[in-house]
Length: 510
Image 1: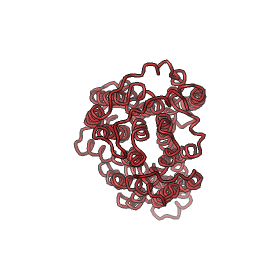
Image 2 (image 1 turned 90 degrees about the vertical axis):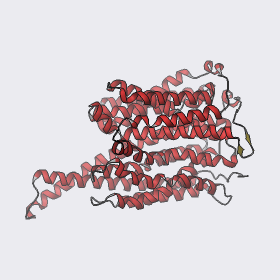
Image 3 (image 1 turned 90 degrees about the horizontal axis):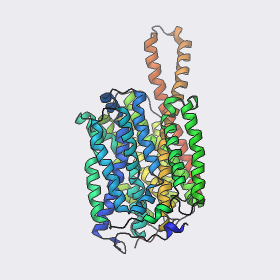
Image 4 (image 1 turned 180 degrees about the vertical axis):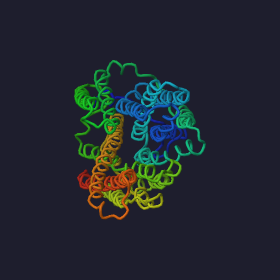
C-alpha cells in the first residue's frame, strides 16, 4: 500500500460508535443525493435524446455523439475522482463538481451549436462522473462497520434505482410537461440540495498541495486518453459496424494499448491514483468480473423492455415508465433489507448473491417468451423478479468485495470499482445492441426464406411492402427474445464464480 494515501488522516465526520452526528448524516446524505443525480443525469439525457435532436435539427448519427461525449467524460473521471477529493478535501471537491453540473445544466437548453453542446456534455460527464466514486469512498471511510452495509445498499441504488426511475422522469418532461429543457434542468434542484448538505455537514480541510508533486501525471494522461477512446468505441461501435470502421478499430486498439501502459505506470508509481495490485485479491478480482457482467445482464431489466415497447407498441416514455417503476420502487426498501440480512451470522453472502442471480436469470427467461402481442402488462413477472434479484446480487457483491479492504484503501477501490461499473454499463449497451442487430438480421433472412418457400401455397399472399414490414417486426421481436435468453444464461454462468469467492463472515452490527 502506498504511503501517500495510507498516511492520510481519516478526517471522517464525527461519529460515536454506530451513531453519526447530524452534520455527518447531512453530509453523507448530500453525497448520496449527488450520486443519484449523476445516475439520473446520464440516463435521462440518453432517453430524451430524440427530443433534443428534434429541437437541434440534428441527425441520428450526429445526435448520438451527445451520449458518447457524456460517457467519455464519466469514464475518465472515475479512476481519478477520489485522489482529487482527498487532495482538495471531499467537501471542496464535491461542491465544485455539483456546481459545475448545475451551471452547465442551466445553460444547455440555450445552446444552438451542436458541437458546443457536445463539448459541454463532455464536461458535465466529467463533473457528474466524479460524484459516484465519492459516495463509495465516503461509505468505506466514514461509516462504522455496524452501518456500513446500509451505505453500500445506498450506493447499489445508483445502479438499480436510478436507471429505472429515469424512464418516468423522462416521460414526465417530454410527455407530461412537453418541455424538453427539463431533461437538463431537472438536476439543478438536486445539485443545490446536495451542495448545501455537504457544505454544512462535512468538515473544512486544507488543500494538500504537496500531493500535486507526487501525482502520476503521465499515468493520468495515458489513462484519460485510453478510457475516452474505449468509451468512444463502445458507444459508437454498433452504429459504425465495429471493425468495419477504421475509427472504431483504431480507438479500441490504441485505447487498450494505452490502458495497459496506464496500469503499468500506476503499478510502478509511489502515489498512484488507483492500486491495480488490489485486484490480486481473490474477492476483488472475481468480484470485478462478476460486477462487470452483472451490469451487462441488468440491461434485461431496462434496455430490452424499453426497446421492445418503443419499437413494436409505439409506447412513449411515460407509457413505459410503470415497467421501470416495478424495479425501481422496491429498491428503496429491499436494498436495506438485504443489508440487514447480510448482518446475520448464519447468512453466507455468496449464497445470497447466487440466489439473486437465479432471480435475475428467471426474469430473463420469462422475458424470452416475448411475442409481438406483448404489451406493458406482460412484463410484470419479469420486472418483479428483477426487483427481487437486483438488490440481492448488487449489495452482496459489494459486501464481498469491500470486506477485504482496509479503510485507507477505500479511495483506491472506489476508483477501480466505479471504472468497472461504467465499463459494465457501456459493454452492456454495446453487447445487447449488437446482439439485437445480428439476431434481427438472422431472423429476417430466415423469415424471408421461409416466406419464399411457402408463398405459392398461400391463397392471398402479402405484397412486398407489407411482407417487409411484418418480417421486420417479427425479426426484431425474436431478437429481443434471443437477447433475454443470452443474458439469462450469462446470469447463471456467474453463479459458479460467485461461489468461488472467499467466504466473509457477517460484520458486527452492534
